[in-house]
Image 1 (cartoon, helix red, strand yellow):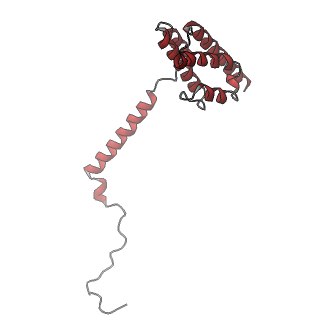
Image 2 (cartoon, one colour):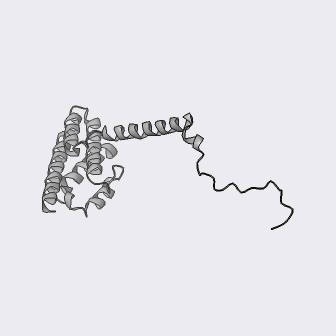
Image 3 (cartoon, one colour):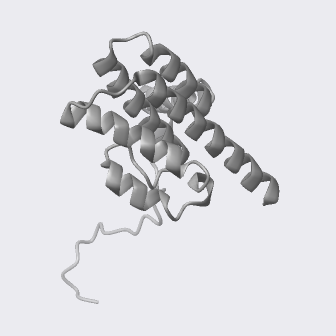
Length: 163
C-alpha cells in the first residue's frame, strides 16, 4: 500500500443494494399501484372478450340478409360472406385470395373436399356477374353457398369425431 493515502481513509463495509428510503418513497408506491391497476385492467379486458362466434351461423345470416339486396349487391355480399366463412374456418385461406387461388388452397384441405364444388361454383358465378356482367340469379348462388356451408360443417364435425 502506498503511504500517500489520506489519514482519514476508513473502510465502511458493504452498502445495501436498495437504499431503505426508496422503499418508503411515495413515488415507489404510486408506481406499484399503477402497475397493479394496469395488470388488473388487462385481466378484465381479457375476460370480457366475447366468445368466438359460430362462422357457419354468421354466414347463414349473411346469406339471408344478402337476398334482400339488389342483385349486383347481393352477389357481392354472398361472395364476401363465403370468403369470410372460409377464412374463419381455415386461416390458410384468407378472404383476399382470388377464386382460383382459393380453389388451389382448398384442394388439399379435407374439411372442404365435399364442399369444394358448390363453394367454387358460387364464387365463380358471383365473379362472372361482377366482372363480366353475366346475369346470375342471387337465389341460385345463395343455394350453392348454403350447400357449401352445410357440407363443410358436416365434414368438420366428422373430422372432429374421428380425431
